[in-house]
Image (cartoon, rainbow, N blue to C red):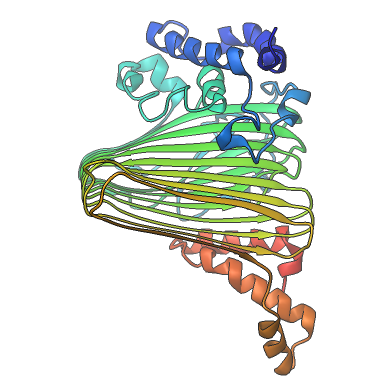
Length: 434
């Protein structure tokens, strides 16, 4: 047995008992999709540091504990309430399974459909058959393969052509059991000229668990989707979240990624742009202790006149480690592409570390592309300036650090979400409290 097979053996062994409970057992196309993921995972196991795009992130912890689906689905509703947004519809997934009793979807217009993936697979699977696996394949990497085989539920959101949501849809991914495995596959379809705003909140009341969630986003012509991700997992959680987007011509996709929680987390955001489509990626990762937060983005300009903007910031203290890998690809024939990428990182400790790897791959001459990276500490002259105005050194450093991070929070247009993120930012990084 090769090493990759050994690392995956416990999960593969447990899968034999789990498979019968997974949705879609009577659907040959879905069983083939799962089999492809299972085969890929069996061959290579979880991604490892010998793979170029995983060289900075070691997933060995996933092999030490065999996370399993939770037997209990109970939720402390009072605890959950503090994360609910009042000005939003809400969908709740508990340990990876849709909970209709906790969800609040009353008032959705007729042109908007929000259903659990399990329900869609049971009642009208033909509506999802061509969409699962359309934006990302198991060959991307083996956490995708794992998700493809193991997903137990998810959310399917579809907005009809020319429809616009009157308020956002918040998806609350909640883990409540120790060593729970929550694997979800979500599909967001925004049809031609439609607009939607979706907010993902990842939470955990348990101590240690593993979340693996994949979003497949399909944007029609001149459609718009704004997607927020608030990764607020528990202190010892393991997290993988991937968002994969296909944008039709003239579409607009904006993603705001806030990675504040978990012990180890990886976020993928990949988008394929058609003619004259736009993509905006903003992100903030804040880590302390021994947290490890990995951010991987890829923007594929496939057709002419595409526009992309990417701005990520990292704040790292103690022995934390951050990773930013941003890649922009301009295909042959994608003339007049306009792309900018910027990554700025602030290290608050001599033991903190960040690995940043911006990449531009350009196969066309008629483009405007740039990228920039900075890694540094607080400027002493700025600290001194505040001290000269009567502020002590510690408070001065807190003010400067807070201002650096809060720039990304200020980009959030939803006021209630912006306030929640600000509270979480201060709570998870006490050194920034003013």
